[in-house]
Amino acid sequence: MNIKPCAHCGGEGYLYLPTCKPKDPYNPRDRLFPWVYCKSCYTEVPGQDEDYQGQTAVDNWNRRYHEIPEITQSMIDAYMKVGRHSSLKGEKLARARLLAVFSVLCSK
Ligand SMILES: [Zn+2]
Image: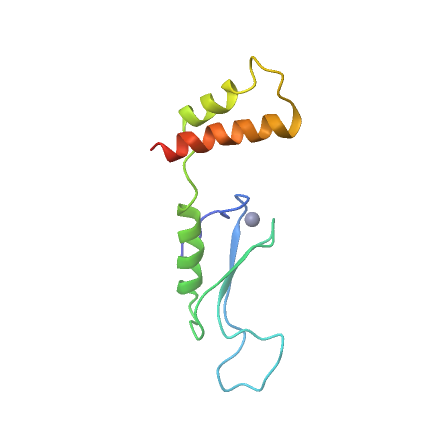
């Protein structure tokens, strides 16, 4: 199974399969569903109960990765342009740059 990089940090995702079957005695450490876990930022994405191959967790994990917008040159240009000729600093500069990038994103 192809597990894409983490949607939050780009780290490697690891697939964990269910640790029990439906009729096993209750153990609070067991999980009946598979999940993909990022060892860099601790993000977890679950799959469906009783999916012993883990495909549902991988599908959910990989779908999140596709939700990240591609960073384009026009977004980088907008970011770099803000603040070049003004006295914005710190958080105000960061907000102005983020707004510039968002407006490029929303104009697609
Ligand atoms: Zn991560």
